[in-house]
Image (cartoon, rainbow, N blue to C red):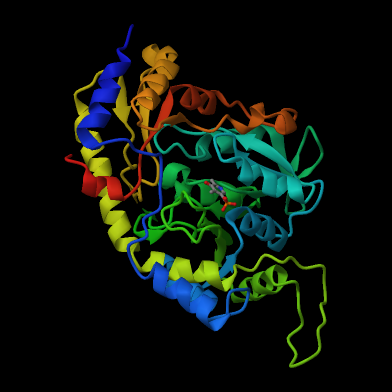
Length: 389
Ligand SMILES: *Cc1c(COP(=O)(O)O)cnc(C)c1O
């Protein structure tokens, strides 16, 4: 079947008023005031009131018991794996369709990503398929899950809420319990997204957020660990602040900690951004609704919508091409980018990257298929205002 790429460009043009990037930040609140205050007072670094305030605001937004702000989401993932007692030589279940940082965090500590497939309903990890795979490939002995082929312990699982859409958490929680895997939710893209009414990042032992420049809320660069476990939260704070032992004047450290604390100046930006989160979410959902209507009449593709158990932040909107027109993906990308509507495919599946090519993996047919058929389209919150959709 042939597919005219111009139909996609026309639909994009009907929603967007002009050229549009994939995701740009909106600074329309107290950003200037809060950042200026950091400069005026000299509190720009890793101590200051905005870091604490930002963490309190994150607790409010996510409903988690504790939030620990970090320099970026990847650092939060790295620290979370250590907090989960993942060690060098362990395997960590990571979706093949994910941002590279998720797998990198495991690699940083000498652990090995073990790639899992996606499901089309959520774009997230397919829990049922993972269970079938682990039934076959692994065994639980003395409370530990072992890969029968590699002999390594499979210690944790890091699902990703892809493009902000919550995955099927109940099913995955069950599989993680069955195989004794520590669940660390990569909620880097899903700030404001809920699963059955509960904020994402709250369903495992730890959750991770990102505030990179292209995320729903930005601190320039930044991230956070969220958890409901008070001891783990205290450990997280200690580990990410160079493991300094609190004392009025002694400067001492009791382990090789990380300098992963979010600077106050970034947190100031984050506080101003979080104040606007409800507005951002409203606009992003409005934009998604306009896209959904604009693409409804076009056969050969569909606008990806949240699964019925979830409320999504629609961080990065996506089109899914039907299998018989998937070969035309790059023609659509070329036409849209020529028209100054920035579009791109999903990340190259992680098991295809040179450093992860030889990692253990289950059948990844759906991740491969979604990669071949998916196109991300402009998603900045301000586009809903500008648009006439
Ligand atoms: C953005 C992102 C991260 C973390 O990114 P940083 O740029 O390090 O903040 C991790 N995982 C996913 C899925 C992401 O999208």
